[in-house]
Length: 286
Ligand SMILES: Nc1nc2c(c(=O)[nH]1)N[C@@H](CN(C=O)c1ccc(C(=O)N[C@@H](CCC(=O)O)C(=O)O)cc1)CN2
Image (tube, rainbow, N blue to C red; front, side):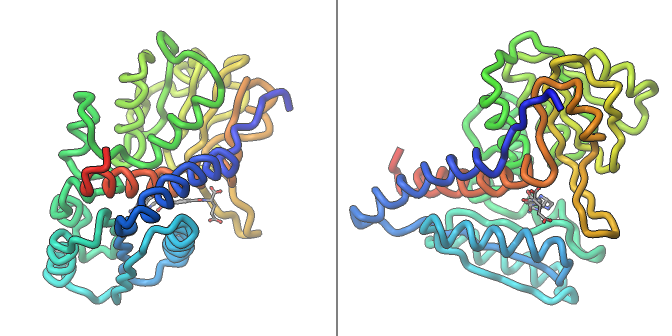
């Protein structure tokens, strides 16, 4: 392997350590701690792991987490009512509703209902709009975490050819906006893209977020390119893999994220970051 690893566990720990210091400094001066409401509907096993990790991260930093574990039979009206209550609760700076939701519930409708200033996932149309026009808001956690990891490369993104593979609302599209704002020339590939390999071959930076195991082949990677893998797939033997053929890509890339231990831990670190940002704004600490 020739590529340097971008270690999301280590960078995430650095981000969290900075947040812990900020929280301690303000709470020691008598301010209330930040509060995050964590809502899970049903018991999807992967979601349960992520939610448990979010709660653990809160506890370590001194963020108060408010758990709402709802049965998968909860109605849209009941979930709406809970979000309304959380929007009004002065102890709560951030609201996150773990996705995916059961099929009878509308994720769009719930995301739209969350107060944009408490939308620490950064999914609300207002926050996506703020990102698009470079206004201060809450940035979607996974793309935000990727931007933080890219700082570790020390490379200037201005003028870079960046290719984002995947155009989901929560990763691909906001990722493209982040890279555009950072000065890259951005191409977004999606299911109708005719020659994915040709796009990836000319990329200085590839962000793979298609949700298809091994979609991005190692031989497509340009020598020295930065490769960011957002995919997480569990094989029958329990091992985790991304959207990129890691071993072959690492032979050609300059930098690469592992799966696990790359982008995933950054998502949670940036969720904590957004919660602290919302808290500071709400308490007028900025
Ligand atoms: N409300 C939200 N729902 C979902 C989000 C989100 O950002 N907000 N993103 C994903 C899931 N996700 C966070 O919720 C998430 C996924 C993966 C990881 C992570 O740390 N992965 C580890 C591996 C963990 C494992 O053993 O499975 C890694 O990559 O090292 C964190 C958060 C969908 N839903």
